[in-house]
Amino acid sequence: MWDYVVVGGGSGGATVAARLSEDPDISVLLLEAGGEADHWSIRMPAAYGENFLGGPFNWSYHSVPQKHLAGRRIYQPRGKVLGGSSSINGMAYVRGHALDYERWVGEGAPGWSYGEVLPYFRRCESYSGGEDAWRGGDGPVRTMAYGMRLPLNRAFVEAGIQAGLGATQDINGFQQESFGPFDMNIDHGVRASTAHAYLAPARGRPNLTVRTGVPALGLVLDDLRARGVRIATPGGQETVTAEREVILSASAFATPQLLMLSGIEPADHLRDQGIAVVHDLPGVGGNLQDHLEVHLQWGADMADTLNRHARPLGKVMAGARWFLRHDGPCASNAVEVGAFTGSSPDAAHPDIQYHFFPFLLDGWQPSRRRGGFCVCVGTLRARSRGTVRLASDDPHEAPLIDFDFLADRRDLVELRACVHQAREVVAQRAFDPFRGAAEEPWASARSDEEIDLLIRQTAESAYHPCGTCRMGTDAMAVVDPQCRVRGIEGLRVVDSSIMPSITSGNLNAPAMMIGEKAADMILGRQPLPASNAPWAHDHQTTL
Image 1: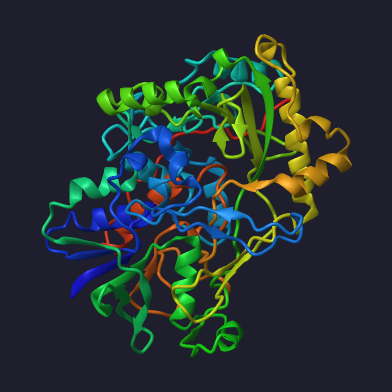
Image 2: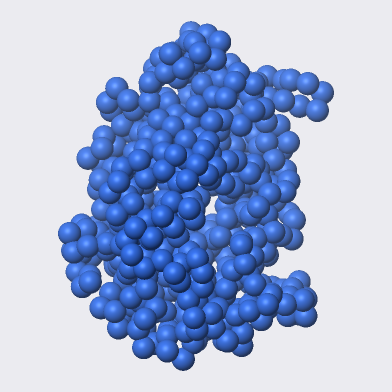
């Protein structure tokens, strides 16, 4: 028997387990369905493509056919390993905009305003640029920015300025909006996943037990109280017991799946699956949100791009350098600059995000044959909402994931604006020394109708699922603002599924912040004093 049982060792789960175990009088069991995060392809920042399309560290989910995306099943990688998706993602460290968290308060999550979450972001982080009002200096997660060291990256930022979209020195500081360097969670050339940053220092504590390779099958409930978790083991099944609380941190897909398998869900859906209803909580599995994006590419001289490192000799040399010294091209995620802009002057804060790739892609891999660059651009606050539902009562079967992308036509209009704006940026004179011909299929799409068709045929997820156990106070909320599952004692959710609405950017940093803040709530501590650090309120982009 443990005081706390945490299900899922990902961005939220590893964080909360490590923080809880800092109290030597508390015993913590962390359960992870995947394995250890010690493989070189996890530790090497540039190797995230090795696990992106599958393998033992990836759940490799797919959505159901998306009726507004030409019937395609949209791929969804999720980490099946300690560190969760923080062990296989692209390591972009983006907190989101201050107004995202102000919006959460209006959506029923008091205590989660920007001033109240910023201290937890700071507690999480050791920023290479040093501590200030926005950035942390002694937290477990090392973050850094390479800046504009590559000519193509400098061209991208300068082009944004020339297009009238501005520049910022720190997207996680006072001003998110505009073009500038992106942070990455990398620790001296090694991926700073939550397994690396939180669990590795904590695993020597006698009060923390970490078990890998043990998928959760369901909750043990007694009179609407969580008593433990049933897990699959090599020998069959086992039940682990929590004296105080069970904490679900299994992802925006698996957390609602576990609740549903345990009889906590919309009653009609459970009856359809032949599962006894323990507690009718209609919001479970609803409110699914994600970011949708498109990739536009242009050719460029091989010598000016990172494609030269994708060739066999260049790849061997770069890899050897990393194995010997943990530096060089393999010590970066290659996405060193990006941008946040507005789709129109009416946007209250940036609703478009750019990731700039200084290399040409063939499918999902850097081209070995040609050089170029890719502008990955998408919207940040889509209006469409989806669901996660059970495919069956078998806990080993993946859930049915339906984002319902582009169900709201306004999302399509805003994605079209992304394409027009990206083309305007790349047309600026800063790209003149580098820009070759535009790559198909986008090169031929000029009219709005042609752009809309290509969006439906090619748009992809940005892999930021959230919202399926929404935090709030209304009847559709799954957890309250203390992360407690409504109507069930001794059960909390601590992962991206509790987000009332999606943040403006990548989700790994907010998920770690949720773990940090939830740990204080679980332990009954006073929250960290709210910050009064200012932020850029007004959307001032000139389009």
